[in-house]
Every structure is written in C-alpha cells, then in structure tokens.
Amino acid sequence: QVQLVQSGAEVKKPGASVKVSCKASGFSFTNYDINWVRQAPGQGLEWMGWMNAKSGNTGYAQSFQGRVTMTRDISISTAYMVLSSLSSEDTAVYYCARAPPLELELRYWGPGTLVTVSS
Amino acid sequence: SYELTQSPSVSVSPGQTATITCSGNALSNQYAYWYQQKPGQAPVLVLSKDSERPSGIPERFSGSSSDTTVTLTISGVQAEDEAEYYCQAADSSALHVLFGGGTKLTVV
Image 1 (cartoon, rainbow over the protein chains, first blue to last red):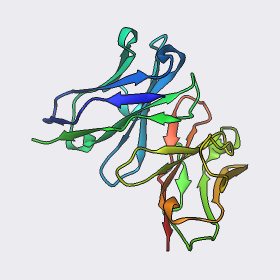
Image 2 (image 1 turned 60 degrees about the vertical axis):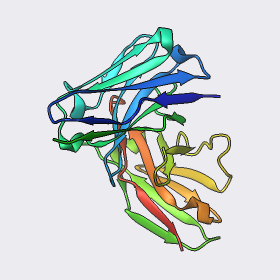
Image 3 (image 1 turned 180 degrees about the vertical axis):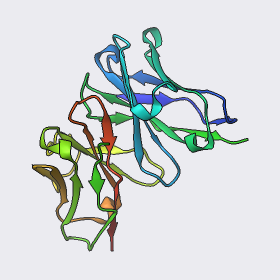
Image 4 (image 1 turned 90 degrees about the vertical axis):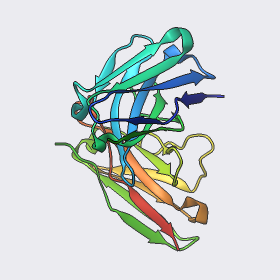
C-alpha cells in the first residue's frame, strides 16, 4: 500500500533551517511528484511547492521563493524539504503528499511533521 | 493576487444536504480538488477534477462547476462528515497552486 512516512518533530531557533524528510513506499517513487503543504496552528492549508521525483524539477510558491529547497534521493525513495531563515511564523505542521506528474491531485499524504520555531 | 474564496462555516442537521462553495477567477479554466480534514489528521481527497470521486469516498459526496465557482455537495450528511473542507486549484498560469481558506462543516 502507498505510504509516505515523515521525519519526527523538530524544534528550531529563529534564523535556523529545518530539513523534513518523506520516505515513500508501495509505489514507484520516480513516477510521481511530491508536493509540500504546511498548516500553521488553527490555520488553513498552505501549498509550498512541488518536485518531480524523477527529474528533480521543482516549482515553489512565490511566498517561499529563496527560502525553500526540495530535493530527493532516488536510491532510498525519499524526498526532502529544507526551509531556511525560520521565524515563529513558520511554526506549523508540514505535510508531504503525492501527485501525478504536473497534476494537483494529492491523493496520498504523509502524517505531517510538526516544526516549532522558538527562541 | 489570486485567491480561492470559501465561506467560513456551514451547519446542517444529520440527513440534510450540505453545500460548500469555492470561488476564484481561474476556476473557469482550471480543475478544482476538494479535501476533508478532521482535527489532528492529514487531509483526505474527497473529489478530484471538480467532480470525480476517488475510490473509497461515499457516493453522498458530489461536485459541480459553473464558471468561476465550484461546489461540493454532501447529500444525507452524517455525523462523521463533520470536518474542515478545503478546495484547491491552480491559477490561470497553472504555475501556482492555492488552497481556499477552508469551510468548517458542523453537523448539529
């Protein structure tokens, strides 16, 4: 069965960077895009960007341009999202989700990773 | 900037029909997707490409599209349908993806 397993919760100080991983299983990793979506406490969903797992091509939301990097390691079917220059406003649950290439349908989601930014 | 607008809340009694709308200019030429999210859980896709129901989603969930508005309809609402519902679509350039602000469905 399709599974996306994410790394554990993180606590970071303002100005630091965080790296969240998303390990895929149950499907051919390179046949899909991995999207990242975050949700601040009590708030709605915010799309961060996508990465094609085969080519590594990426597209980032304008609000995260210059601060987010999405990569992958095909050998271990794992996608990564690095967010830098963290502030308290980046405190959120970060989700990875699978989509068909260049499509929006997020049928499978990871459980989420809580990132807390606090001094 | 591009936006998807949802009403903040909808309240219905069990067995009634709930209608949740999402408005945005790009919806006239972009598909919309709908997600259900319950507290503490990841979102679940309930409708794809305006009206396609993924396997495992009950038939009471349906969708439609008209010009710049898409609609999620839940017929015969059950208590388990109480959740936040989000629409999702790309902008006209298809380069950027947005979620609506979410609609809280309360089953009273």
